[in-house]
Image (cartoon, rainbow, N blue to C red; front, side):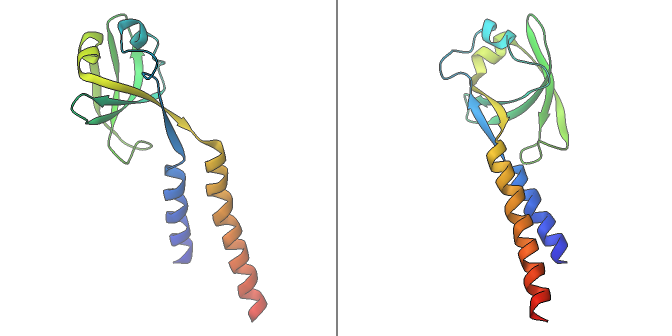
Length: 129
């Protein structure tokens, strides 16, 4: 039971070890900008309505983007639906595009703190008895 609690805690910590870099802060969303999106990367599209879509880009052609939309909170495992949109629609409907990036320092801390805690608990448990 303790092992299960530790694994759940660890998975929660690891899932938050990412940050988002706003790519459109210095550059507006244009066809040139959209053509530079890299296939295989995950981008957070913030729509003009405020809704956010996590898109795993598969291909970028001269006129459109294709990929998968991930469900909120489950961006590592399941693909919710296929995504395909023209540059023109993206330019009109998307307010901001951010790149999902790992944070290595936070990931290292998230792994080491629970491991050290488990080791200390085990040592204290065997010392007392």
